[in-house]
Each structure stands twice: as C-alpha cells, then as structure tokens.
Image 1 (cartoon, rainbow over the protein chains, first blue to last red):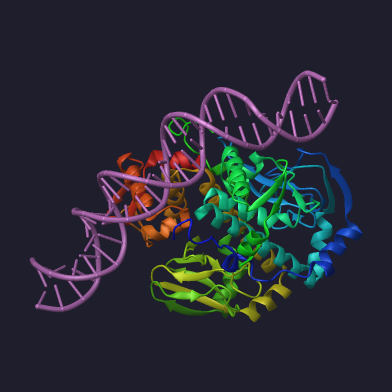
Image 2 (cartoon, rainbow over the protein chains, first blue to last red):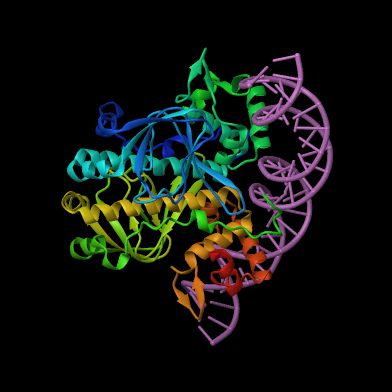
Length: 229
Length: 229
DNA sequence: CGGTACCTTGACCACTTTCAATTTGCGTGG
DNA sequence: CCACGCAAATTGAAAGTGGTCAAGGTACCG
C-alpha cells in the first residue's frame, strides 16, 4: 500500500464485474414481470419482507430505493445494497428471504408469484441463464463492497459509493438526489453517521463533489475520470 | 452499539445462512464430479486460475485450501474466501473467472469440463437446484464477512474466522492446523498482519483459544458456546 | 411559522496501522 | 544430529484515523 495522498485509490478494473450480465433491454425476466407480475406501492420506511420469511413473491423495483439489510443481535444494522429501479429482489434465495427489505423512500414494485417463476425457469433456458447472471452480479456487488470496507479510508469509501449510485438516482439540474440518510449510508459503508457527514464535508471542500443542500450532489468532472480509470 | 467489554458480539442468528443448502451426502453434483471429473494436484502458492480467464473447467477441492481473491491496482489483495475440501470453485461465474484462485498449501482438485456441467444443468432439475443453493451459500458467506468487517473489532473478527474454519481444518490431538499465513488472514479480515498477530496473542492470554506453535489452535469450550449462541 | 428530525461540527479517546527491531520456528546442509 | 539461515511471527513505540458523546445548526413538513 502507498501513501494516501500520493496515489488515488483505484477499485475499478479488477473489481468491475467481468461482463456476464445480459442486455437488460431484451430481458426475458422483465417480460415475465410485465406480463405476469402485479404492481404494488410501499410507503417510505415500511418493511417489505423480513429475514427468514417464506418467499411468496419475487420483486422487481420500478421506482424508489429499497435497502437490503440484516440486523445483528446487538442491534447493529448492515445494509448490503440499495436496490433501485430495474433491480430484482429475492433472486438468489430458494425458499426464504436471507435479508430484510425496507423502502427507503416511496417505492413502486412489481411482484411475481414464486410458482410462476419456477415454471418459467423449468421451461426456459434463456431465463435460467439470465438468472445466473443476476446471481453473479449480486455476488460481484458484495465483493466490491467488501473491498471498500477492507482498505479504503472513509472519504474514498463514500466517493466509491457516490460514483456507483450517481447514475441510478433521479437528477435535477445536474444534481443527483440521495433518498437515504447519513445513517443509512453509514450502515452500508461500515462507518458512523458522523464520519459520513465529515467525509461529505471533506469531499466538498476538496472540490471532488458539489452539493446543493445535504441530499443533492454532483461528482466533479476530474473525479469521475479518476474513478473510472 | 454497546461497550466492547460488556456484551459479547453475536453474529450468528441473523447471519447464519437460512437453511437452503442441500444434503451434501447425496449430492448430484458430487456424483457428476466423481464420474466425469479428472483429478489434479497443485503445489503450495501456485495460481490455479486468474481473474478474467475464460472458464474451461469447474473445480471441486478434494484436499488442502485455496484462497479466492482479487488484487486492486495499488497492490492490495482481498481474499474473499478460503475454499477447503468439498468446496466448489467457479460455480457462480458464467464465462470468466471473477476471482483469482491460488493454492495455500498443497491442493488436490477434481476438474469438470464446462460443457459437461452445462449439459447436466440443461437436463437435470435437481442439479440446477443444487447449483442455486451453492450460489446462495456463496452469497451468504460474503455477507457474513461483510458484517464482520463492518463492525467487529480485530479480536472478534479473528474469533469469528477461527470459529468458522476450525471444523474444516485437519486436526491433531485436538488442535486444528491453519495452513495460511498471518498475512493471508489479514487480507481476508481486512486487518494488517501485525494486528492479526496481536489478536492471536490477546485471545490466547484471555484463555479464549489455546495454541501450539503459531499455526495450531483450539477454541476454548466456553467460547464455542458463546459463538454458537 | 414553528417544531422536529436530520445533519454538521468539535473535543476527546480508543483502536489500528506503520515502521522497526527482535524472536521464533522450521527446513537444509554440514 | 546439530547448527545455521531464512522466512514468518511477535513485540514495541509513535502516529493517524475513525468512533463516541455532546452541542449547535439546518432543512423540511405540517
């Protein structure tokens, strides 16, 4: 490892998922959801499914963000992932939810009954392949997060997170709007809410991000190049 | 969160994988490997497959341990998992290895050509189900590690790791033998090799583990109960 | 326009890292 | 079989980073 100030942290090339995801525009799974799923809406902060529950439906997020997390016995919460529009919930699990899913803001979902998915999987090889790609991406997502937690200092961790999520957030006048709190971000990145707040401050003062209020941000042009490198 | 000294960390109940793994004794996948796989041996420290390579064979570990890891551009290594006897390598990936696999000690493997697996998956629903269970377990393994990194202090992290791996290590006179170095453990748990060493010392002095040389250990009886709680 | 929840900032403290110096353990060759 | 040498592990001291607790400040919603 080198000195913090000298060499920018790069997490991309080896951590970026080796391209094995399907073209989402022509997704069979999307099609199944559109044709056989039913829509529902969940208010902010409401629990969608709880860890350990039997899986009755698989979900696709249409709008809003969902936090996928677990709770330890001593009350600590670990957020694995923020699922946004287009993301699937419950695809890797077989019979029971292995995490709790909660709405961060107002969320629109499509639900697909279990049996329908299973019938589709039994019949359709393309659907099976797509399913495997989703598992691979889910795993890659955890591994990226794992690597952030292992060796990035707080500001770089936040920067990595913002870079990853920016393109998926609703944007106004070039600013992306974060729906989640500092506490949520902290529970995702393994740091306290105070440290998250300080990291925002440092990035802002360093000109690496611009902010508009505490939930709208934009990544500086030079910075975007550095992260993508 | 509470004070470190007061309440023992408990990572289990919510983090333990919700049982969706198959009975390994009657595994179809094992059968396929036995009938159609071929054996090979890899010396210690040798690379088995590299990140990004096209997948030609899937592997099953027969003996020894394999570290599954990636390297960042600034030379940092993140070990995701130590795969031991019975574990599968390359099951979640579709076309390319998303990690590098290296032999920790002398490793015996069985290799199964890609096409044979794909034919089996197309024909056999039980095999497909088993495959999904392996993906789910792989994901659960990353999530456990993620939670350790997020909030456990160094000694508890090491303790969690030792508890998880103890049963899978070769044992002599009640002592399990670790094949990997302090550096390897550190790269898995996100801590420096010195901190790993100090954590061993503290656990030993606290009577939570017993040691015989620097690579043989045994978890104290009381401690095992605490972890399993 | 006020209240409340969230965010920011400061001060202090604990833990981990880093760098460096020993010490230990183990395989090899004398 | 013992001694040597090297790699790995341990230990120490100093410095940095993030956590905790506590006190403001800000933004948003009714």
